[in-house]
Length: 604
Image (tube, rainbow, N blue to C red; front, side, top):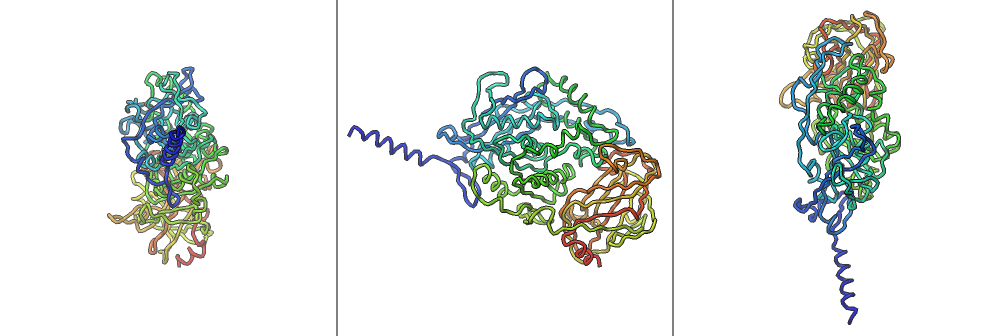
């Protein structure tokens, strides 16, 4: 009888163990667990993780401000869970202001333009909550959600660098802490440590825009424990964000923004460190490297191009982007997806037809994190590689394809016939005539007005016959323009449009705009080194337009439009520069599903 209490204690212990709360999975997805669902039961606390860099020059390793939200069972039952981690430079506030924050773009090419105002950022936010993003989505499904502020923002120490090494090493340090390899502290300058005893050591990252860039930045370090990332509309190269084929070009909606403007925008960290950070980062490194004079690619930009740092990347990649994102343009995601695919990493891509932002459907994200963070064999590796939302479909109803670009797409060359100042022709037969046509630069007219105009000498436009059947374009169209300019410097802008241009409440962006691109003709040989081109001398300028996947409807005409200054994107010099295009040396290469035969049939 004296052993009965021990026996009962054993049974009671076994019963309690059996009742422990844990994640639940169904159809390969983590399900909402009622015991995790009550936000009042969540544990929320913050800390500072020590990094391996001193970017504010105070002689101490910078510490990142980190906030944790986790189910109470990670404390009461010793439950360990994987982590969804989001980091950002925006959480503590950004600079307030209008156009004065940006560079003045009304000046000749080859000039820097007048200096702009450098604003101060007023920090906001309260401990321990850095952000509430993602917690309602993931904590009830059996994840811990972690947030951190980027270097030099909020209560994180250091200096913002906008793509510098510390922006990759900061989230790496947080992941190292989550995996037991780095130190966390209760205070920014204290010595009392905090352990992530509730972490399984499996981390996934996601976020949109800049917050989507930083998961990729962390992944390029090859940090152990970062198993999967879902970047949404990430900026993967600051050169591609602020320049285009040698041309100074603003992101859509932010005319005159440049990398130093973004630095000012996010610099919400310790006010006592700002003067030093400004002098070292903004007024020296950025000022000497960003080069608004030539727009050329250089070592400064190469260091802020994550494509150049992917060799050690191991994380599974689910990429998400909009084909009509003219802020962070769709090439940003495709270039990384293509490289990761080439490296043999687990990859998947989701594209929609709208603008900036837009995550994949929840079921796609859930399956991705369930597979790589919880280790549930749900077969996601065998899912189609590409998911594309068709033009008028709901965002959560993408169409599956074997890959992107569509494997059935083949390049088709289209050639030009004269028609200025009206509409020229765009067809499959190349003419050998020496016909040349000229346009006059005038930024007063935006791309829509130029495409819609019947007659204008401010653009050249070439149209296919009316399509007798639908055409599916998938990939990156490419143009070669043989051109000369009346001045030593000029913008070159190219749009691919679907005409007639339509308006009205039922119109969507894909009804009109297919894709577009910009280039500096002085960089026709080398993006790193422009060359002097004398006025009147012809050069061949070849470059890719932004990637796309679009169905061009029956009854439409595909139009190649060539013009100079783009009111919404480029520098805006005094009107009057002439661009002359040699039609015999100019062509459009279009990736068509079904190839030349399909396009030929539709153009009959």
